[in-house]
Length: 183
Image (cartoon, rainbow, N blue to C red; front, side, top):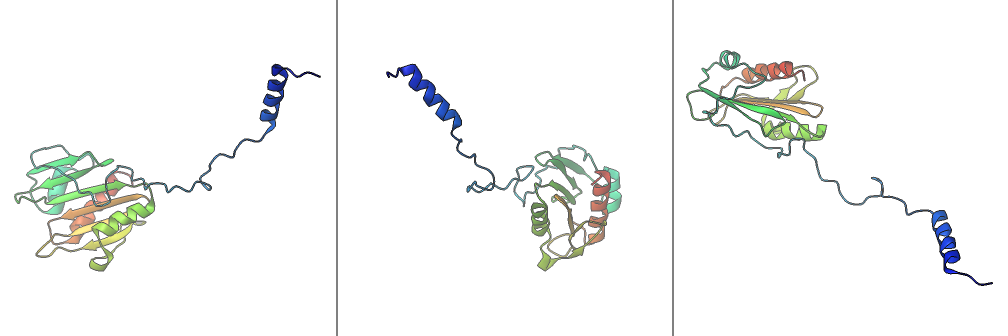
């Protein structure tokens, strides 16, 4: 019996079709590390860069409300759009900002906790537990720095730095941000 090329080719195709394929890589079998994903692509310790002359209104805080709550006239303000939720910076007469508000939409709860830990290290702050469901740290101002209030809930972190001494002002601003953004 003589075999021709088409017969051998057909048999080869049939055998190939019946042979199980190599298993595809699954997350369980992949050995490469997955890089950490941060929603806005900025490092955990990113601070907004806003000049006082920008004058772009904060989309979630009213400037007059900020002046009344923080206790200083607002002479300049702006937003940093690099953050997934724009960060807002308010100025008064001094060169440094009177108020900086950062809302971080992180990829994981652990990343949001890392943001809060960066802003309000546990060894130098008091616990912050307001509003309900949020947790983090707070610190009153002193001769070298102002007050802060930093909390997270799930993958979201809200950080408020103020040049005032009272962390209550920072807390009230954080609560207003959380309410206005529906977080």
